[in-house]
Length: 184
Image (cartoon, one colour):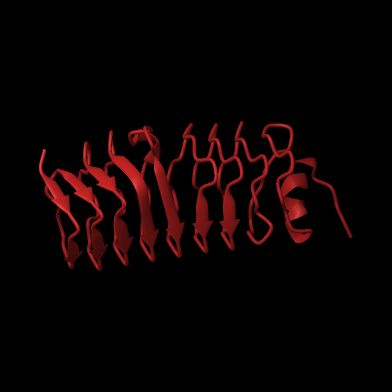
């Protein structure tokens, strides 16, 4: 497997399969590319479109995404070994994190519309100003997670673990929605 170290890539439309170490990708459009079996270690993606990229057995080890479009990516197919990534100012709508172990993940100012967090371990996760419109939480571990600045989540306390999680007073409605009650 080709190993590429310490490189800056700009305005690309394709990548060669390999192991990328400490690389930065900027203003690139990788939409629908097959990244299966790629390895990204300590890499950064900035202002990139990775919508519908296939990540089957892809390794993401300490990878950051900033101002990226990541629509419909099935992260649950990624290699779980040492999986660690961060997202800031990204569009993650229709992404799947199904059954992943993502304790302490940081997701900052992201749109997570219809994202799938079913059976995901999000212990002590930090969600800053995120929009969870239509996101799925089912058997999700949100213990000690901070959603206090986030909006539009609907989380059933009976179907998810939320002990010591942080929510805003305004966001509490997202915890009570299933009860169809009126709070004035």
